[in-house]
Image (cartoon, rainbow, N blue to C red; front, side, top):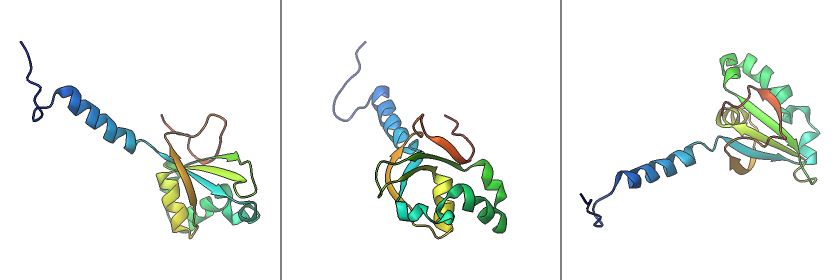
Length: 123
């Protein structure tokens, strides 16, 4: 038994590839946020210090279970701290009036990154 392969007919494998491609874009969970040496001088730019009190004051403590922020030391003055923030963390950071400089996206933070605030990633 043969399956026709004309241009108008798609196989289940074609459908699977399209769904996988859409899913692959959706699972890029962590945004890479860079902070300069000047920015890290203010303790308010450290999520581990400022985000918890903000969530308490705004009555959003239930979000603590959904926020995940990791950090790594950067390699230059312009990028001295790298934060790996999930979508919920980015949303709260913006809500706090911060202006994150997003330079990339990853499925999960690097293994060398340390959990700075929130809960570990679940993948």
